[in-house]
Image (cartoon, rainbow, N blue to C red):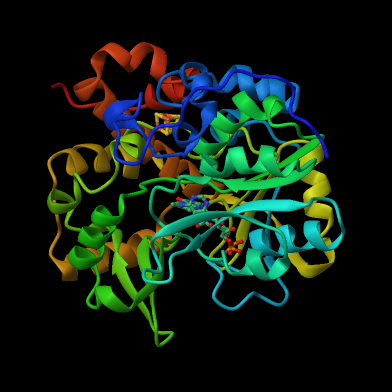
Length: 398
Ligand code: FAD
Ligand code: SF4
């Protein structure tokens, strides 16, 4: 059994107790464990240190003068892919679950940190350490709610795992990178997804009730590259709602404060990132950040159909116009929103330009949020790459 190097421990906080990051806590789970001792350095909302951790994880931080690096972080390659045989019920085609299953099958790892759901509620996250492909598959599909993935870190150390794969979103991975040397692992693989606009379970209910015609039958949803939210229902039907028809006034306080102040949309510190927003519709977007990421990708290479990434259109006007519209909570009537959706899908940004559109829209919104609500944090909390991205736009005066 491997033994973790001696490290400091403090008593994890009980559920419901205020967290050190207060309202900005994303419930990543670190503070549920004795690793809370490291919270001041580790917490993504108390200590922004993406550049330093990029250096640690990838051997270099992003080149701010290279546009692809600026937007998408350190990477060796990016491409679009989908599974030749998609996993039924996965969020997309199931590339994430497939990699995790193969890593277990090939004996590269002993366990996979992932998120299942509770028996009563398909959206209530339950982090686990999966030891079999069946347990990994039971964690497929997004739980679009804050999930305390790192709450199982003590268990990882106590089980004496040597080789572990962790699946997670940016804030979870930032905290993990800070404490990864204390868990007793010989090898850690980090498989990330991009993440944005996450919500508490209550917030999710409000979002579903405000936006879907049948909130109780939604099994998953995604903000798609065709500028519509696609809700998948229990009977397999897809309901499409144009972004421009969302009730922004009602939804303004739905997203968690942590997500309104996050600038790590692309999961900068994962070894391999699997999302969708830089790929054409129906493809996933793969970003290999380092050799460990490539090693994970290799285990599923023969299961994938791939194509190069591409980029079309110009996002800048659309982003600039959306800033005051979002700020004022403008909602178009549904007919106009649908029409706008059709037009922008034809002439709007596509591929990597769509990903930049989404990053720009969220970073400008989040910059304003931090500036207005946490002005004392603005300078230190917003990473340099995000400042450069936001500087391209005119923001409303307060
Ligand atoms: P699957 O094989 O279905 O596996 C999904 C995996 O996600 C599971 O292993 C599960 O453990 C993990 N997971 C589920 N919920 C959570 C959670 N709350 N926290 C941590 N891990 C979780 N991609 C983009 O390109 N742009 C986006 O804007 C974007 N937003 C996202 C928002 C959220 C909240 C999440 C969780 C993901 C987001 N993604 C985004 C990633 C994308 O939706 C898919 O998750 C990704 O492409 C993988 O799809 P898949 O079919 O391979 O995953
Ligand atoms: Fe703790 Fe994570 Fe919340 Fe930060 S985000 S206060 S590390 S639980």
